[in-house]
Length: 223
Image 1 (cartoon, rainbow, N blue to C red):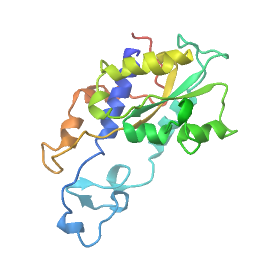
Image 2 (image 1 turned 135 degrees about the horizontal axis):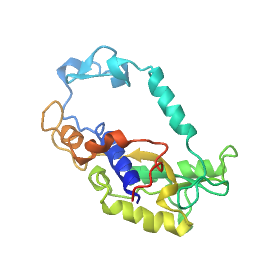
Image 3 (image 1 turned 135 degrees about the vertical axis):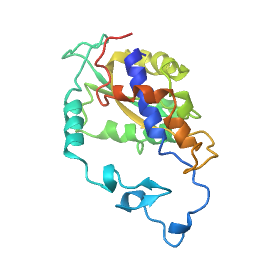
Image 4 (image 1 turned 120 degrees about the vertical axis):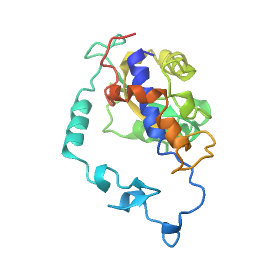
């Protein structure tokens, strides 16, 4: 896969997997009535701020929304070389493990995605641009966070060679990613400094988190 795209996906995988934490036991502070992380407000869980956004807020910051909308507007059909083309395609790709592929496709006999899966529902939705958008399931069983966190991981060649190429697509056309990953058999919980989530956050993918540009992943020409 194009290196900048792989780096972005690898970094996004690390970022997404940080939330996949195994908590051993229920903290005394919430034992009487657990509070969802997004309902903590100014409270904390194991010393970590709650809320979906900074300062315990669940309201999307205006600047965050603006960046997201602007990047979404950059998604457009491109040819196999990544050049804008009225006859081109843009690809939405899933990244992840067994749960991811089950939700994304849940393949039935004949290689068809189940009607209740994401791809199955998209295929039946008249609002989807079936001519330009191609949805590809790149996730696979057992492919947890550690198998996606480097541009050189074998998964990216697998996706290129067995998921994109058979459809006449290239990596340069991948512009949107659905990422759902988790640590494989986590054993050390937060707030320990050596917790699985902390080690993952400090991994190789963090160095390129600034390259994240989903949903527009094909902006560069670096190979």
